[in-house]
Length: 234
Image (cartoon, rainbow, N blue to C red; front, side):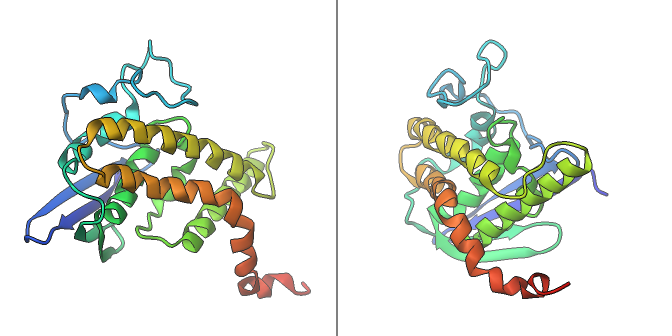
């Protein structure tokens, strides 16, 4: 298996110009691997607009790890308006995706990858989803992937002799904390960007996080009939 997982986002604008963002993740840990050293801007300091549920110690962590890894991208998109149109291409090792969309919709999955893989303790439980990244996913697709990931995690816990849950209450609690991070991190982005594309891209992620506790069970019920083969007599 390769030592790194590579994902590349390319944004092509109405004037024909484009910007590419190649990402590298450790294939084992899924940790984000920075491609270049950047001078950390002031807004990346952990003490500035620190998330209300952040467990990191400012004495040991000078910078917010998510902000540090996002700073280069935020800088490049700080002057874009969220509803500007853009063509987005996403290349992963197995396939490629393409979509014409708004700037906020196109940025949202890129921000999601970096927020999940940068070492934020609150976002850490979502990291397995990045291994099977699906950009531009619908709410139904996202909830199905979230629940699947969580139940696979419970399977591994059971196999390791640890307490495991056959349900999604724990997942709802995880997303309750993620929702707080998304809300508070938006304050950082507002301090970094002159226009709203970055912030609104995060708002989309926040909407998914906020809707999960409300929509998860209803969405699962909608796809229940697809599992008829498992629900009949053995």
